[in-house]
Image 1 (spheres, one colour):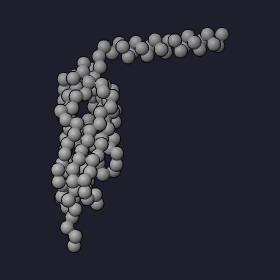
Image 2 (cartoon, one colour; image 1 turned 135 degrees about the vertical axis):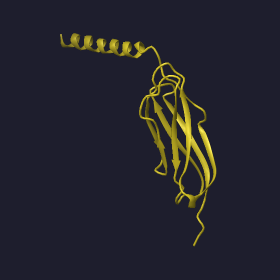
Image 3 (tube, helix red, strand yellow; image 1 turned 60 degrees about the horizontal axis):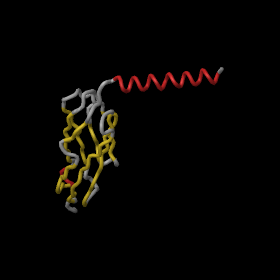
Image 4 (cartoon, helix red, strand yellow; image 1 turned 30 degrees about the vertical axis):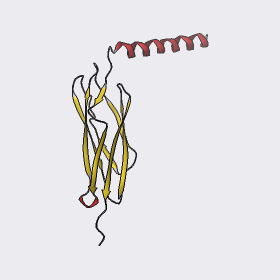
Amino acid sequence: MKRIISLVVIAMVAVISTALYAGGGGKAKIVFEEVKHDFGNIQEAKGAASHTFEFVNEGNANLVIIDVTAQCGCTRPEYPKSPIAPGKKGKIKVTFNPNGRPGGFEKVVTVRTNGSPGKVRLKITGNVIPKAKK
């Protein structure tokens, strides 16, 4: 008897999950204008450099940015916490701190969404010109 109840519960959960997923009627779609930015030469003495990656939700459901993560502490992303409606634009600002990091760099910021694609990698590159030695 317990086995039958368990099977019925599992079947109901599967049906409800499928209905909720399919019943939404739409899917968000994030499309970035660019996914790579080259800062060129950055003067370490001038401090942090930022770039804003712009995107649009080309889907027909609200786009939710679940998380945006950088691969190290020298790179800080800022992103919208509220849903982006279909057809609307959003921005992700990425700030790189060159302090103590002379030479070339390549950093990846990973964007996770509820849409398609579920994961996008944004890349920043450049070259840090070190501070003059005293």
